[in-house]
Each structure stands twice: as structure tokens, then as C-alpha cells.
Length: 240
Image (cartoon, rainbow, N blue to C red; front, side, top):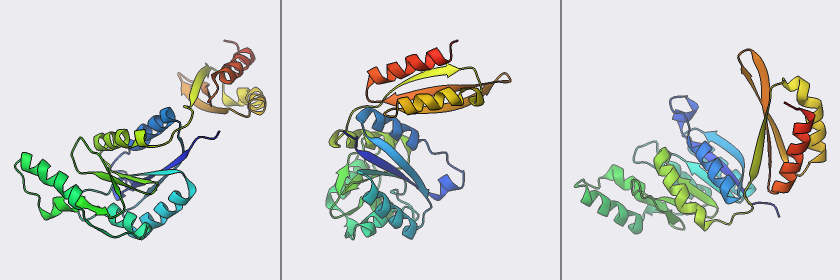
């Protein structure tokens, strides 16, 4: 059976401008692979409401799960929550359950739950809260869209909260072989291997080191016996 599918939507001008390097895609991809969910697409959009709404609607219709990153903080440009509500024609306002979490947190820290911080309690009516053990302010899920913070430590904690609630499939397994030859030398036999093992994903990732060319060949799939059979063929075609 085919594994469930997923997409990721990274939101923020700071990503597109190069001021911030996204680390969340790498983490999410690894976690989904272990859970048996295939990450099929990643998009990056600016802090533009129309673009966010359009991307959420398109990805939600195309994949089993959508994970968003960024735009749920306390500042003026944190508009993701409102965009999610608009995408699903849902009402949004400060939710009592989210407010209670924030109130207790800031009371313990001796800080005021001011208007800026209260923005983080704006949650669509139909949403389910996502636990945030790092900084308390919750993420949320609406239908198949899981809305998470952009700060890597918080994003990772929210992923850990959400994944156990999702249906997974067979974990993706892999083996890698380094071949110290250029891709032009290995393309022919590698192409034949791809045809004979069409049920596997076979990728070639070239490198250059000390003036010499090579490639790491990664064979991925859900059946280790098939992966090992393909690897035997690969080693035989390119003996060390």
C-alpha cells in the first residue's frame, strides 16, 4: 500500500530574503520518513495573505497532510493563523483554552499577557491545539493542516506532539554506495538498474573531492530484501 503523503509550507519573508536559513524542512523530512509518511512537496511563500491562503488550499487538496512553519508569533507580520482561518472559511478569535495556557505561563514568569502576546491565542474555532512544551504558545491543526512555529526548537517539539496522532505507513529504508567515478561513467549501468528495480527509488548525488569526481548512490524503498538485491547488482557493476 502507498504511504500517506505530505507537503510543507514555509512562511516568511526572512526565508526568501536569505536572512534566515530554514532548518525545519530537514527535521520534518527525517521524522516523516521514520513515520512512513512521504514528503512530496515543499513551498516557501512570503508574508502575503493571498499567497498563503492559496498555497494552503492547494496543498491541503493535494496531500494527506500539510505542515506549515512560521508566522504564528506576536508581531504584526505573524498572519498565518488568520490565513488558515480564511483558507477554510473558519471564524478566528482569541480562544479561551489557548488564552488559559498563555495566562498561566506568563503568570509563572511574572510577565503580563499583553495584547501582543495575546495574538498567539488567536486560533480558528474548529482547530485542535498542538502542544508546545518549549514556549507554551500552541500550534493548531485544522482539517489536514498542522500549523507550527518557525523557531526550530519549537517546531521540533510541535512535530513530536503531532506525529503520534497521524496515520503512518511503512518506514522508508535505504542503503548507500560511494562510487569514485564521474556520473558520466556510471549513468549507463545505473539507468539499467533503475529499470530492473522500478519499485525502488535510486538517486545519484555527485561530489568532487581533491580534484576527483564521484557519486553517492542511494537506494531507497520499503523492502530491505529488494534494496539489498539492487545493491548487490550495483557493487558488481562498479567493483572497488
